[in-house]
Amino acid sequence: MAEPRAKDRATGVLLRMSVEDKARLRSEAEAQGVSLQVLLERRLLGKPDADNRPPGRVPRAQKEVLLEAKDIPNNGQLRMTG
Image (tube, rainbow, N blue to C red):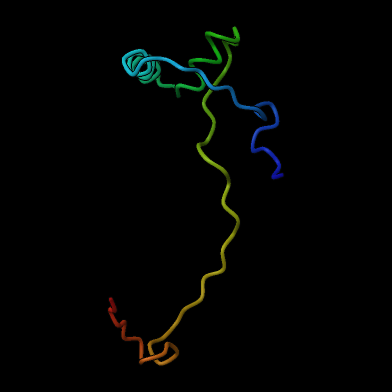
């Protein structure tokens, strides 16, 4: 299994609620300038210092390769099929 992005957030919890309740919480979080995750950490876990983190996982470095049309089959022309 992959290493979690944040070791102190290594497990998930499913919380079921109405669409309206979730919308209200999102609005409250937006008004405070924080994510829904942070709002819930502050309220449910009593962590007043919970703060936003960069979203998503950190992508691996990707090597860029410049291709020229002469290096691509059919002289770089794409052919639509189907």
